Structures are given as C-alpha cells and as structure tokens.
Amino acid sequence: MQTYSFYVDLVLRMAEEIPIKGANLQGLPGVVGDFLRLLIKPFKSESQLYTRFRDRVGIDVERRERSIVVRDARYESDVRSAPSGYAELAPLGLLLRYGVLKRGVLAVVEEPEAHIHPAMQVKVADLLADLAAEGIYFIITTHSDYILNRISNIIRRAESKLKQRKIAVYVFKRANSGFVAQRLKIGPEGIPDDEFAKVYEELYREHIDLLYAYSEGRKLQS
Image 1 (tube, rainbow, N blue to C red):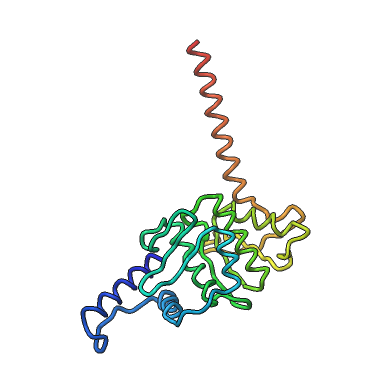
Image 2 (cartoon, rainbow, N blue to C red):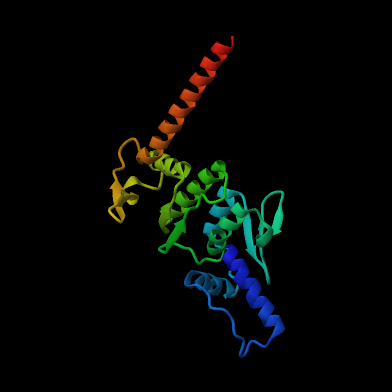
C-alpha cells in the first residue's frame, strides 16, 4: 500500500507539472500496475461481499477523486496518514468494495497479520474464512499462530460453511540449499501448530528457569 501511495503521488505530480503526452513516467512493478489499473476504472456500486469486510474488521475504505480514505467509528484519514495496519487492509477492502474480488477469483494474500493487533488478526481470519466460504479462492502465507488457530477452530465447527476438505495447509522447511513444501494433515484436533508449539515450549522453559533463578536469588539474599 505504501508503494501504491508513492506511485499515485508521482503520477499526480507529473500530470500537473507537464503534459501527459511525452511524459517520461517511471515504470510500475507488475502487481502495483495491476492494482492501479483496477482503481482507475470507473466507480462501481458497493458489492455485497464488502459488507463482510466492514462488519468483520470494523473499518471502511473508500476511493475518492484523488485519495483513498480509511475510517472507523472514531477516526477518518487519508490512507497515507492512516495507521499502518489499516493501510495494509485497505487494498483488500477496495478490491471487495468495487467488485474486483468476487466469487471464483483467486487472491494471493501475503501475511495478512502484518502491523495489526492479535485481536484484529482473529477478525481478519474470520473475514478470510467468510470470503472463502462464499467462493473466493485464497493462497495465504502467514507466520501468525492467531490466524492459523482461528482458521483451525472455524473448520472444526459443525455449522461452519468452510469445510476441512476445502483447506490445504503447507509448512515450508529447509532442504539442502532450498525449501520444500510439506503438506500438514488436518485431523479432528484441527490444523497442527507444531512449529509454533516448539517456540512456545522454549519460551516457557526459559520463563520457568528465570523464575527459579529469581526465587533462588531471593533465598540467598534472605
């Protein structure tokens, strides 16, 4: 989103200062260019799926003539001045609002947990699960145990529209000079979180050792 802001500013400044014809504009990375082209299209009415975004994460994203505005119940700002977590969620909101992201479309979401509080990460996981159940396909990369465990809990619910058979989870592990993708088996207990559990255990052992050392130190002082 920050890259998007940079290029929008660049294009607008050059459009004001020199004629468009013959202007030597900087090239855009493919993903950024695609995103800009989608936003330059005429405004569309708000899609039904966008209500899921607004209801789940509690923010509203709107494209105006020369800016993108992000707001919640207490706050409104241009996306360039918005909290980084809101700025990260803004592209998803825009694509949903104007009907670009719809049933049957494949979306790649990289680290949806970026710059947002764990409580918001859970809400984003709920949103992604809702959208997937509505027929949007996702490839998601994440390092968030909150998102992984929330998705795991969702697919374990009997009433959930997002079924286990529609989910595939992979962990990437080092192998020689590269990485291999190992598919995880989703059982009755949900999505395995062994990779995160290892870190929890190490931190917990360290915590107990520090508590013990502190306790022994107090005994020696007394």
